[in-house]
Amino acid sequence: MTKLTPLYDFHVNQGAKMTDFAGYMMPIQYSGIQEEHMAVRQKAGLFDVSHMGEFMVEGEDALAVLQKITTNNVKSLKIGQAQYTLMTNEEGGIIDDLIIYRLDEQKYLMVVNASNIKKDWDWLIENKTLNCRTENVSEQTGLIALQGPKAIQILKRLTDSDIESLEYYHCMMGQVAGASSVLISATGYTGSGGFELYINSDQLVSVWNDIWEIGQQEGLQLAGLGCRDTLRLEMGYCLYGNDIDETTSPLEAGLGWVTKLKKTDFIGQSALIKQKEKGVVRKLIGFKMDGKRVARSGYNILDGKGKVVGEVRSGTFSPCLQTPIGLGYIPKDYEINNKRITISNGRKNFDAEIVKTPFINVNEYGN
Amino acid sequence: MSNIPSNLKYTAEHEWVIKESDDVIRVGISDFAQSELGDIVYVEVETVGDHIEKDEIFGAVEAVKTTSDLFMPMSGEVIEFNPTLDESEGDDPAIINEDPYEKGWIIKIKISDPSQWDELLDAEAYGELIG
Image (cartoon, rainbow over all chains, first blue to last red; front, side, top):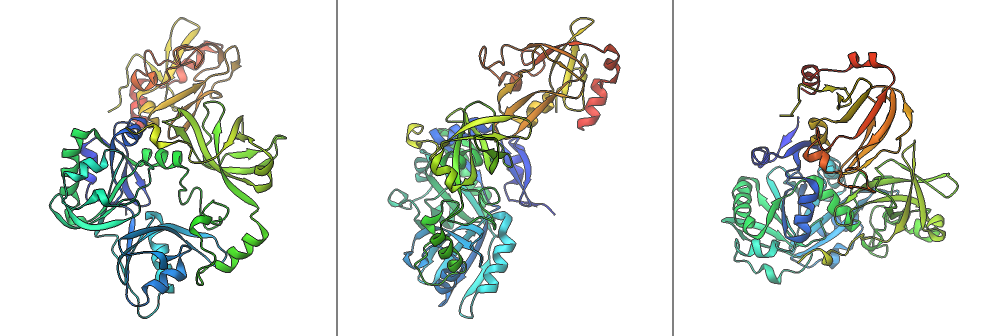
């Protein structure tokens, strides 16, 4: 049974192209991916991402449980701070990537991918201890992402909270457009700044409508999951299910910076320490195509002699660069010695250059 | 609702076909196809001068979100690629999104088997196909 967010009717009335994403009917695009993409980079975009999952974790053992199941150091989180992190299995494979908020002394919120809600919830329950209360609040929590350089001007008109002093990856509770207890978070998946607003589902539509009405005066556009993908890929952000999954490790994916191997014990730690000592065999790299053909997920990556050495995990056409970009795994040894790869769709070969991510400097596009 | 002009023929691969003369056809993709693809950013046709059989690939369309191959609606020789789409000339592939049936035509084919014309779908049959 496909689920709907409270904004389903709004999306349909706006002529959005809808698609089933992780069991939810979600808007892929409204006016067009490139137009929505550039609106987020230059002004602001409004996303309904209510499909995301949220778990409340509370109590004396909350910190210890989160330390055990995630790779980043939860202990360093101050109240009102957010942390990007991963859950790994015993082999060091990635179960999910997520954000943890510390809301109070012993109260945390986990935000997980929609496609992994059940798996992550089961994992949390399996690993929690007696003095740790958990609640899956995904169904009653709506999530709006207001992203882009104009997001702050728009949100300022709808809240009295001091959002200007809210630093990146920090959060506060506040009132937004008449809704009380909104978790205002300076986070996002676009690279263009802005906020994510966690709101009780009952109040989601009214807050959304107010943002949409006020925001249009600042150039706000509706933005779908299509441009969410192009925006994250221009930044080189991993997408679970594409670039990372249970067969990939944080060290291969370039997520060593959220994998604190020296913190207290966590699931997957010993496997990852071993992997680090031996050195990883493959590495997630960014590439730019020479031509205009786009490398899609699943295409093979070939070396100079035409031998398959890796595979593309994400690929799209970058609206900012007007050129195709992508992410894929290749052997680490190959990456050290080469800057060129060939990509094959099975019938034709296309040449590409290995490049560093992010692919763009967002400051060149915002105003 | 998709626009399906009744003066054109169609294929199940969402191409439209019109006769320019007894042995030359013009080919593009349907309004439904361009809408499904979304923002079209590149059209590759490297087969001008080639003789290609019906249902074989003659090129590809790149949209931001997806790639779609282009198939020959009838056997014949690809004799022209729309210069408006060509990267080295007009370089305006998005014209297919704006005007799929006129300015957004893709290739012309000199057909080798005129009897294949009768295998194409009419507007009504194509409309039923895409629901």
